[in-house]
Length: 330
Image 1 (spheres, rainbow, N blue to C red):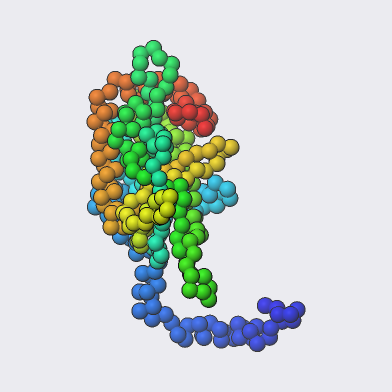
Image 2: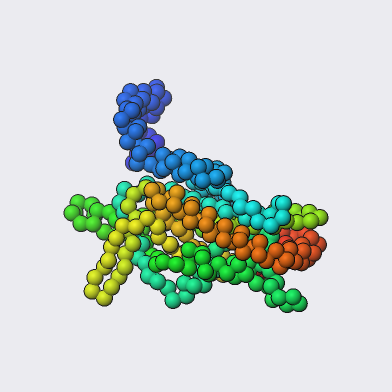
């Protein structure tokens, strides 16, 4: 270590003799300080959320890795969770996949919400991958229909209901001033970015890692990016003369990300820890409705699987395989 161009001899000697290490460990952290530090972190929240997932029949994995799309360095998602809902045939399933970040927010997390004019179309923002995510509903038709549209998800998917936010903020006090400011906290912004990146990665991975068998069954993963908060969650509505602020348990947040020169919309559920179990029940009801509607249209589903497999089995490029299976080229 150098200071003003010259070696700092006292610190150099102290490091050599181990004095700094002894000073650092002479006053170890107390049990009370350990407890306080853990309560301020998100680690205990992650453990509690993982336990709830297991109670609702999910396989949960903490610190699931995915590559950062910019740096390609490994990053970790707080929780990856998977459940299974049987559909048609012996091996046909819907697999809801929850990609979860946890935040212990000491100050409220506020979302500015409104009711968008095109909200009835937001079911299209539910990300899916697998076989089939598209069907040809009319015999002889060349037009593929997204599975979400085929199953009329606009009637029961929660993305199509309630207020939606595209802006959020938290709060902090100005230094040396008794004044609060609304701002974007770095950890919150990072959590939303991670959820979008992880969703894109796992969706792409499921498509591109496909190995076709002689006879394929229905196998569709449905991705739900979720932020679970331990502190207060606020919904803010802006009127002509005043702001309406209230505590809520669930907020829908939309975020647009540019990937390969395309704008992709992600729909993220933000829920409080206390509401998380009810949120899982909400998802279960929606997936069960998808199952019910799938069983009523077995023939069209089977025809879609056979048609997609006939084309994709001949392909070798992972990108071309995804293009053959996906709703549109990516």
